[in-house]
Image (tube, rainbow, N blue to C red):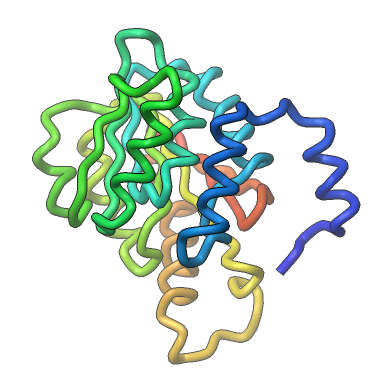
Length: 215
């Protein structure tokens, strides 16, 4: 579902900072060679992620769901030279294309790839994160949040992607649609959880920004 007309969306993109050349190349290669290329973050949302990261200035970033690496590279733009980004994806077939463009960027040594189940990998990471981006299996969003929160501190930001799910969140629910039901439950959880404060943004397919409250 397009929430804005094509002409308005193009206007937004035209008046947004250009994407780096290597990200444009990554987008082209993803669309040519990888299944479900619509999953890529893309120019406009990528610049939103980049700007948020630059405002937050995180020392450590955690990304759940790497795909071909576009969003990781956008988020890495806000890292200081001593910072690092840990990104997790279950699909080992995408590791080479991720690394190809990580190496082409200026963030190669700062991006740490993890392949496997995020719910198993995250508890093993012995560090806290200032910025988290959740963009993987929708039916696991609530579990991702629970495993991530102990790895944050007051003021950490958690971004959740695809929270509008092509508009299905406001349509009659098909009882067999487990992904939409999971997102409806997750969105409700974000609004009601006293550990965080949340605002939902109509960016692309919906992007929720949650801030971890102080103790």
